[in-house]
Image 1 (cartoon, rainbow, N blue to C red):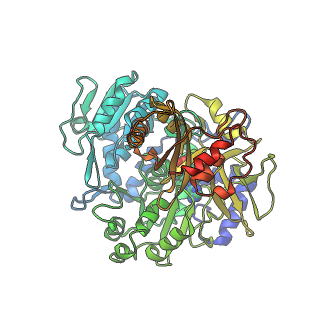
Image 2 (cartoon, rainbow, N blue to C red):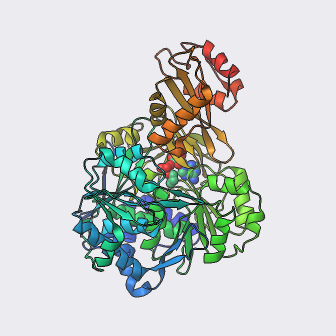
Length: 635
Ligand code: WT7
């Protein structure tokens, strides 16, 4: 029996049991039956939690683009692989067939080679949601270069620190981007970033908005003329299953962003297998994930997972509010989307507009709805279920992370009974554990603790680029022989999981993972600022918003606080990006600290959430008197 496509709840349990009883045998069968390898592995899995070393399909040879493109050419060459929906509703959608995708990827791969990019080199991709973004990462994979996509909302400083961290050789960008009614000068941001990035040798520029940008002679070149001259065949580089496929940066609770490294073989097998089952993708379906390819969701479920299954994947350039709040539903109707995968923050923003925008459109093509990025609250879940799914489409609340590469806890639609706010059950092969503060595993049901995974899975990140020690410390040192996720979770009376949120200093704002440390660093750069502490507080659309407590150097300073607030947010925008701006800033005389000098964020969190009756014990503070002062002056 093939276990590739699970169709019933009993089958889920059967296959799950098999996958945990003998993981090697299970994943070997999946890998063998559904993918093209140039050479078989010598060993399915070897691992060492202490050293944080994990190898899947060791010694196997393959190229992921042959699995995502070439092998479909005979059977579905004319099928749409990428369905590109531009920002402007009057601009025609573009259907890129598998054959055409093959040609475009090969051409760009040849351009990269011409420009001196070799196997193992890092290419930074800073592009809006246009086909060239997907084509760029596939072209890198074609020749064995490692892609490092930077979300096109990040600032110049964020770009240069990432480029310098991974020593990227090339940047692929565009003159600008369209976002709703705005255009954004991407090339200008890249120019600023490249003032301080010695490793960059060339910059390929896609013409998207026809703007007259500055092109630095030497490194900067327009891409289109090069593509016009490029050969449309490019032999796929033979890669090792454990060679890096990409680096993707994610925030940590301290320090600079972590360049998570994913490798080819395991990532391919796991994203393909999860895509097929979590979305129950059938051959003529049209799958739409609204994420940006700048995040892991887009890597795994716009590009690699869907294409490995020969699916049609929608890529949308715009925003949900342009030209009006009906845009998502307009696209669903127009392209007869069958699976729709979005984030709770988008659902809440749309729900706020009422149901009139949804009712205007025919959404009868929809079969499965998905949610990802943060816990989905009950209200948003029901709005999604009633207004979008018309109570007929199961909602898959999928929990996973940049680090996990693919979906980890999720219902299987039409099989697992769903329950609002619950991600329900572990996906095939995933072995979750809940741990208490003393490092003991909480057995049985109706328990709450820290979420860990106690056995390797194929798509787990293998390291942090250039810093394996940090990878080891962050994920494998909290508990022996386990991966620690950073999330808290509870298991209910039937064994369903509900993710309760981060237990570290990472705050999820509109589904974006933000570390407090880099934001505080940015604020502290302001000459008037002495110290700062960031916490999250509940926000009805963003899930969490940021609240900053800031102390100033000169207490008696007569500066205009309004200006100071603006300057602080400008600094954050410059150093990180607008997504990290603070909603509230409170200037305070001091921050509550422990006797060892640590800021007591727990108390600041309670104050920001307006839960001052639940402050707990403040007597151990070095300066308990500041607490009342902060409460009296809440923003
Ligand atoms: C963090 C990972 C997974 C791709 C997008 C985010 C939170 C993610 C859920 C969910 C509750 C969720 C967790 C996780 N998260 N999905 N369905 N329910 N929380 O990737 O940026 O690496 O963030 O997002 O806190 O640790 P990421």
